[in-house]
Image 1: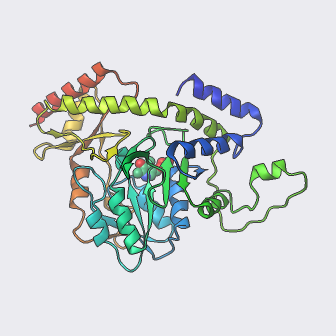
Image 2: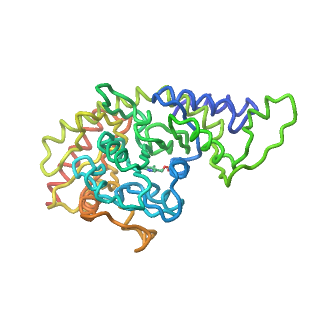
Image 3: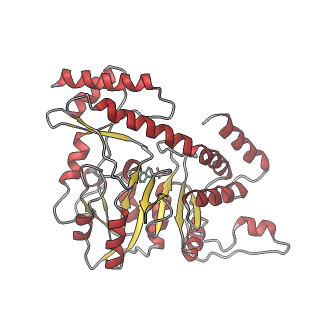
Length: 376
Ligand SMILES: *Cc1c(COP(=O)(O)O)cnc(C)c1O
């Protein structure tokens, strides 16, 4: 962020309308236009977006939702907020995304929905998952937390993630993602009834939206139509989001250049596999995740990199291995979760930012090459 976001925040603060006002409404309209969805509902976080999308999809206590364990923990947590049980299907080791065959095998009579993840911004196999959800009568919800600006080829043309290609798509605007408002989230859908429901829930279930009451020439008393939540986004964040949206294409273009360059540079490094982008997918490269050959210890490599001045992160976690996921709080689909656990243990996220220079990138790759030589 720079002066442009600071100026937008200032404009919102001095406008006298601090939350759920014209900036949030404009952010929603512009976001929907950008991804090609009919509706977009702003909320306070990606997690809030997932929670409300699952509720809108009809997920209720004791239902099952098939999803990935190999994801940020909020994906599975949102299922449990609904009182439902996450059923974890394994991933494809090449793309780190759900393996559709494993998803189908995990479906039971209790399954209500599939919650797929565009992991680290890489689109998952939506065509296969949509075919399965359609045939089995299930809802398909996209955890697109990391995927603002990612694209998928659908019916011969490139479309933004969020159109949505399932029933509802959920975004996060945490600073770890490409587009940020500090904190925040968005739910896109083409169904006006769902959109209305989401707007009710995010604002305590209140029957009147703030702008309606503000514009009314007669007294309106609200009622509370449903058990709602406080999942609002502020106008300060909305104003920042609108600037970030203008920057999105430029940020994604630079990230794609850097990712392509990593691919070339890593060719020369033995023992590292670069991430795979399917022909029908264009990632926004929110994270650039490489896999280390079995002979390397992940922690030692990361430590050597840190000693050499390069900060990396362990690849994505597995929710089912965390203390918050005791036996009985989740299930695994047939075939287990070997590829998920292996990806957690073998992968390292390399630095990739819009501001990164080519020289810095070369330093990262050279430091990685030396780290691998010294630990093997
Ligand atoms: C970041 C993230 C979330 C949570 O988003 P918040 O805005 O932090 O609540 C959910 N799912 C995935 C895959 C994420 O990467």
